Image (cartoon, rainbow, N blue to C red; front, side, top):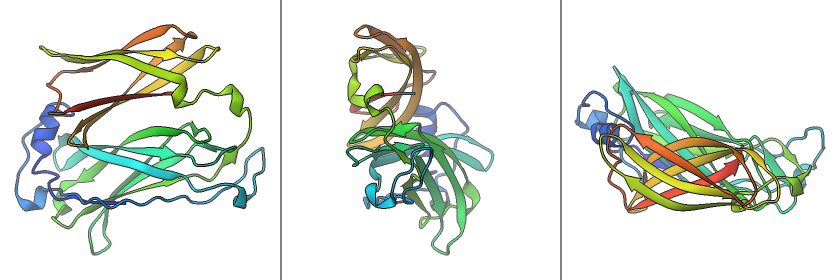
Length: 253
């Protein structure tokens, strides 16, 4: 799946100041810009085996159902971009172990400007998890034709202990609110709906504007007792970027 990077550094100053913390002002000429298109693909690198062998024909490819990126902080000639991918496992009885979301920035001549990946823990059957990462992109070679491509791959599927592991649907996120001031907060509660304590949960915050992801952040909460709401907060030292939707998802870590 490709985004055409058509306004990267044209909006980098705005996004850097608003979305991912303050930084130096960026140039706004076409060489320092990013634009996007709407194309989507999904990718899986096949099925491998671990302690519990699984036939390749038994596993379906993982699907990248949504994705996004936003400009983060910048230093000298490098801009750090936050990215995320929502990974769906269509298998009914196999968990995808340690899937990776890969982001690659390139030019039409085949030059790779940057590539990086982020590994998740696992995706249980028929579940969707959000995997987030950071990629460092040199600005000197960015043009109006620069693209960013996202892929998901997984080489290991397992059927072990699936009933003992919570899905994202086993967590309820409620009471989300925003507070602004010298620091800005997004707060809420997450409840463990299972009968067992969950040691650690990863919370992913996505802010959207007109459906587009404009901010990405993660926090962790520990020791979620069954049925008891646990408070969480995301904090920013600069105003949140302009947005019209707030999403917080939870997954066991």
